[in-house]
Image 1 (spheres, rainbow, N blue to C red):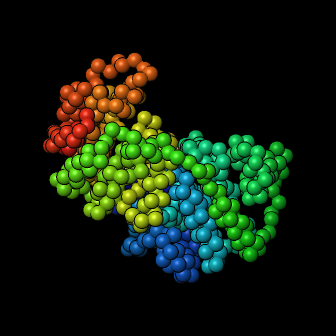
Image 2: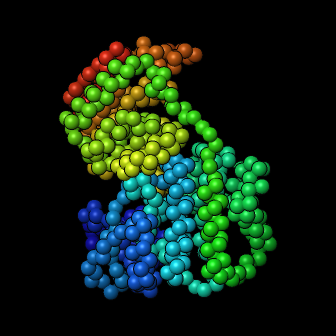
Length: 456
């Protein structure tokens, strides 16, 4: 191996292939052990069918001179997100895409050998499989080997999000291989036992697992026809399609309506941000505290990608569905908590990276109506905020809200004000250790100020 190649750390479990970077370009080497499966994927027409439907990532074959390696392919790169960063509809669409891929694979004599939720990523807000070597040649009569994994990786989290709490996909952080079905069965409300799909695929499935685990008996080799497997997939599709969120309103749904912005002030804020946008012309933007994406969309006509990050999964749900409905391909809503961000987890804490480690070529970070929450609610010092944002992008649009603003007064209503350092001068002193202030603009008829900064 050449010294300038680095292995993608999540790819060590695959005996048939390995993902690596060479000169910061992503490649996948496919070993001879996968030759027959790869040839069928390509020659059967399955690859063409799935890529045409935007269900499988496209790749090009690269010249290869090694006898140990059958093929080297260069897949299209996408920004990696993890299932605990998805809203409900992202999760649901990812699950349905996996089932659709499996059904299509059976038509071409192949089958998914795994149903790992990490293998699904989003391009233009639509799910696609990024693991080209997930397919294997279908053997007549064999059940779907990834059925249990699908239930743990997709069905169990979705059911818990819909019937218990929308935040329960975060259980995947402590259960990286999927939520155990016995745990899902215990957590789900009793009424789900009357849902035939959930009763069969989670509750009864869990009992069957426990039965064999308790008796140390080997599970009987079950033969299942291809048509029966398709019927199982159709049942799963129907089950997942019918899992819906209850009626909801987000924590921040009426935020813009009940701030002390007048229509004039709100439009002034937009115009200032547009001026900053034209000054920098950023192509990749991370918008922290994006809510439902009102200000993210000011960049949509010129940016390549906008990460709209917010702690509220219901705000992200609205943002994602709005982006889908309006074909906004460059806005990527993500559930993200700055106070407790996605951790690096898995083997040696390297299988799944934290969000900051995935920052690549980000031009601008944006933090609007955010830092007063970080400082007053969570006691994060300004210097720590400045350090964090400077590690993401060279440019920053940030909003400072004075303490006598009505929103902050509401925050301090039932707590002691110990934040003597919360003032504009202290804010500027902290941030100018990392940034130069390019522009500073008061928002008309408010106690709020916008800044455009550049990293020193």
